[in-house]
Each structure stands twice: as C-alpha cells, then as structure tokens.
Length: 254
Image 1 (cartoon, rainbow, N blue to C red):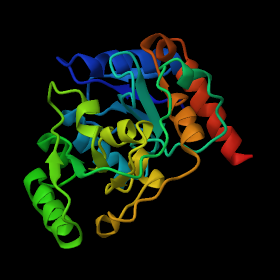
Image 2 (image 1 turned 45 degrees about the vertical axis):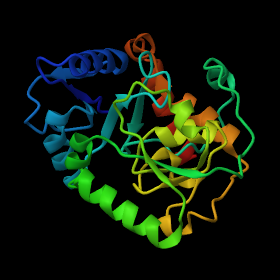
Image 3 (image 1 turned 180 degrees about the vertical axis):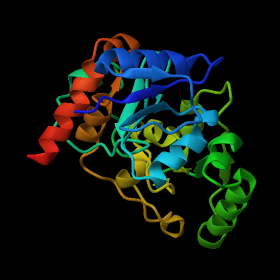
C-alpha cells in the first residue's frame, strides 16, 4: 500500500505541523515542494498556497487526504477527510467523542424572527472561484423574493458570541461555514449551499424553501460521526487518525 506524501508550506504555522504529524502517523514522507505533484496519495492541509496543487491533484484523479481545522473544538482538533472537504456525518460512531465537548443537543426550534447569514471569508470564496460580495447579493435577493424576515449577517471574524445571533434565528444560511453546525446544536435549522459541506444533508439546500425548514431526527448520530472524524495533534502524530481513516475505508468496501 502506498503511503501518502505530506505537503507543507514553509513559513506557515499549521501546514508544516500537519504535514509532519500526518507523515509520522502513517509512516509516509514529507515535502516542502508544494508546487510539484508527486506520485501516489497526497496529504494536504487547507492552506491558500496549497490550493493550486489540490486542484491539480483532483483533476488528475489522485487520492487526497485533506486536513483542516475541526468542526468544533477548533483550537485543539483537526479534521481529515479522504477525497472530500468535509465528512457527511454518516456512519455508526459511538457518542463517546461527542460527549467530550459537553454540548447538549437542544430541541428543534420552530419559532424565530431573523435569518442569520454566515458567509465564509473572501479568501475562502476566492479559492472556490466565487466572490463573497456577489454571493451575499444573490442570497439577499433570493431571500427578499420569498420571505420578509429580517436578515442578519455574521462574518467569520467577530467577537460576538454566535449564541447571541442564534437567539432569535428562524434559520441559518451558509455556504459551508461551521456556523450551521452551531445552529443545528442550538436547534436552529439550516440552509447549506456548498455541495460538499457537512451540514448539507441536515437541512435545506434551496433558499427559496426558507419558510419550510426541515428538522431531521438523526442529529445525534450526525454529530457523533463528525466528532469521530477529527483528531488532536497527538492522535495524528500517533497514527490514530490514519488507522481510523483506513478502517473506515475497509468498512465501506466490505
């Protein structure tokens, strides 16, 4: 079995640490030649300079282990997915790792006045060939046609607790922001517009249906599975993440 080549961007904080840790955990190799597409599987952290290589690897049909900040517990946990930007929350994980975060699931809220729109950063949109201002204009225009609820914009960099913005929210609208996950835990339904986002299957994907949100009954196992697909640095270094990814692949192939 080919072990991945882990790429790092010199001068960054997270990228070299991820590359070293993942290579250590899977007994693979590490390189700082992040403009060259090596043979075999690739492990890449979601740093902006890495995206041209990610796109080339995708176009070539290569296996990619994609690392990024965790779905929750972001200062301590990091998610890794195989050939995907985010996990879809499917699986048979136990609740043990989710319990660690001490975030009790709130009942679905079927009231609320505002629509909370949470864009990703302009840089993130740009990596996907999109413009954040244009995205916001289109979201506002679509919502204006189907609802008269007030719209509140929450940018990624803000000191205001998200709980404050969720307090009177009817729904959360995101491209792929983890704010949708915060909303789901709080019982606020979501609309997710990026096709790969974890929250997509837990809510609407069509903004025009904002007045008819859905309330899936499998939120608990969804979050259990997300919690089981993010790891600490120590777990990545020690091969826990690598083994879990391989076991998942074997289970799906069985």
